[in-house]
Length: 258
Image 1 (cartoon, one colour):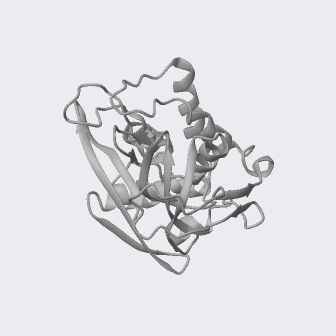
Image 2 (image 1 turned 60 degrees about the vertical axis):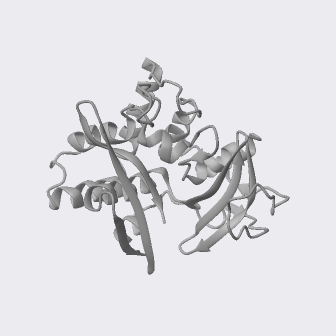
């Protein structure tokens, strides 16, 4: 993973982002607001969000219904947006390294086109989030990168870009931090669309391609168990879980930094 980290040339620098931790939420389970101000105090959108992997990633974020139980479907335009995102990240060193590593371990084929097809399947295929419904209301990408709400809580939501944009648009209220650790990993407690997320973790400033590559590697090599590794000199623990639906096996149910 250190190789992926070192190759993440699209990662934001310390000059691009400023955030304000404010109050600590020791348990993260209440709705008590320990942070009167926003988490993000500055993001250099002009420098970051015009980069192709960022702009194509951001175009995907409004393609989903945040409430579980609401059937999802992909329009032709939205399908094209997925293709554009995957095309852009396939040109990065981060994704190329992930593909080469997984191929060397026998998890994926040798071609990038086959790997991109695999990414489309495991991240973007729709399936029911609950066993009690037949509605294809979720996908790995929606759950991990966009976030979802149930009748009682927020599920998923492990990406700093989505966090920043939803906070900027007034949909998210930061309630305090649960923990911090290096490299720039934050565990936060927040309210989104009137529901509480007790703990959401993300790397502040990582590129979309890095997050997707890190979770994908762990998904293949340590499914349904701890994926422990060293990155940038720090110990990391990522969890991924699988789900099967219809003819599809081993789709991504969730992935997050523990």
